[in-house]
Image (cartoon, rainbow, N blue to C red):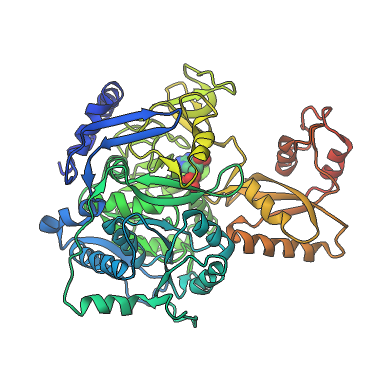
Length: 637
Ligand code: PRX
């Protein structure tokens, strides 16, 4: 068996789980033995959730890129590490072997050094889905710089907020990115963001779309020119910086229930060990399998299951530049057929949108290479689950439903493909080392089965969030203060009669739109910036394709003369402030909002109205102005 820590039977899972809970140090120490260390750890774990202060593999020294690349060169140097499928069917795909990836990473690491990037510096990556994105991430990790990837759909304002928070002095971007029928103007958006970020010293630009852009003298340089300066002296093998186990590896911003996005910090060793452990076990990965995760690398799923875990396991990761429905609804199946994909990992929202096209796009596509299917990012409805099972997996591919979060680094609850039981719409059982707890509003543990509650985790795992960048207190209050001595996930959860877990959705003011997390407060702040807006309240409602849609109730200073025009202007403002993913699906102009006497908006009522449950609004007697509810009900869209 290629991976000594791969679990291959349900009984073995049960034994392993028991061991991991009873002897966590021994268990994780054993898993960590399978990696390359410059120096082994002195102690496996020290933790205190109340601070929080969590350290794994204490005093261990390593570089994650030696685990992703160098250690595979002797045995598997010619194996494909990355297969890249371009947006256009006309363009040739690229296959990058471990040797080639190693060379590219070393070369670009030298480019970073030449441009003044040092260990500990923050480097922002705002790129499309091209191989140069993982190359840049790994090059940062190679020299100990901390990367922060920003999804290509975020606006200049969002980028600027993140750059300032991370104090990132270096940026790697492209002239543009291809995504479906659109060219995304990356560099010009960066230029807009940098107006308010004078501390940025260098912008390295990768040429992809040949979009006309401006290059600022002294600040902006071309990727290719910088590479040539390095390779002019022959091939380079930039030595990996020795990192402490707890040195930060990356920052990834994510939305919470309040204010601005938080910079979730993950560290080197714990992230490496846990992500690889979950990848090999959940997907039952075998060397040579082609793993296709359809996420964008701008989100945690891409970081973990396109780049780091797959490469640490010596696997082959397929990345796709475009959209699943471009140029037609058969593209995903073309890719599976063309590259003989073995593992397909995607989001319920993508499955639902492909389902809507019927079966015609599947005709003539050979999907027989598929062995395992996976979903992530949001609860999957049973209809989508069965469609995936019957029409894509042909009832012979186990489906894994992986529940996790940006903060968890990798999957915490999932079945192991073909090894532990699957149950439609259930993430099922915790991975070894994961101790889920359901609690009531007061934080009292709810024991037994066939119960629902708020999902917490009572013991650390190696890739747990360490801090929120620049503001540790925010990390504490967000995740570790709601319930004493536990990590609070923000999700509601049901545990069935057999102890299987089903995630029911967020219990805080966070929306999940097409598998993307968006804070209602963020959207409200953006709407409130629009001229003439007095106040707004944003809630989610069930949406057939996106899982959740965004419903905004907006109070204007004066009745808009042209409601449609004002609505589209507000949408434009939200796009400018956050990005198109945060655009409300519905905007209802209202005269007031249902508030308690202390001024708190009763979102429960707004949620029900948005969901269409207008006859069952519960007690409204505590409202300052109960009459407003009828008005809002009547104006419902
Ligand atoms: O509500 C849960 C939902 O997505 C949230 C995490 O979002 P994010 O940090 O953006 O990471 C998404 C990819 C890991 C969770 O709090 N979620 C994620 N996976 C599932 C899920 N809900 C139900 N089932 C899942 N498998």
